[in-house]
Image (cartoon, rainbow, N blue to C red; front, side):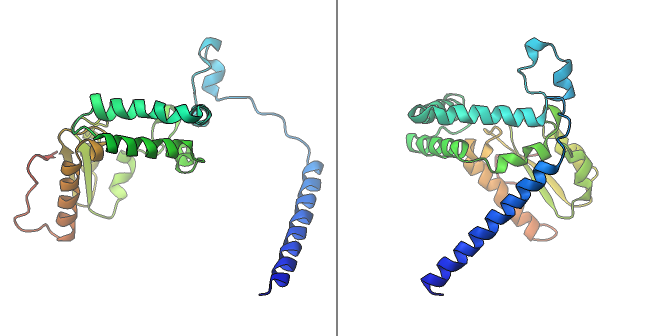
Length: 226
């Protein structure tokens, strides 16, 4: 297609979009305005005024997160430094396992900062996953019984998530299920103990792909079967 044809097509498309926008604006002006809904969730309306700054619904929690991220972006060159303090503490002085090297810490800081500072993407689905109080809308115990594939849960031994929930879910599952706990690992077990995490993943894959279980395949040393 020639440049002239491309330019003509582009102008026609732009004109069509302007006409559509004008029609939509006229239609919107003809629709009577709805009565404004009461602001905030029902929890926010009954809380004392002194506590209403606390997010009380998923929408408000997400809005608070966006404000926090806006502050992070607004800090400019000081933003990465703030993230660096977190990574140095969480994966350094307060690490559950292996300490990050200076290079690893710098790379992780860069990754986290740019993930937080970038335009929102995956976090927008949180309102559909969590309900009030950040509890799951569809808890594991209510859906695990419908799963169709063999499942392996991997937890850090010091994970704040309770592996006993997976044990309870396993009772109703109709497929093979195994629960593995990795020592010297917290919620970010893949960072705290990468070698242990990799061993757990490889073991799970080999165990599942072998069908009824590979003969002689045993849990790698150090890992804990729950």
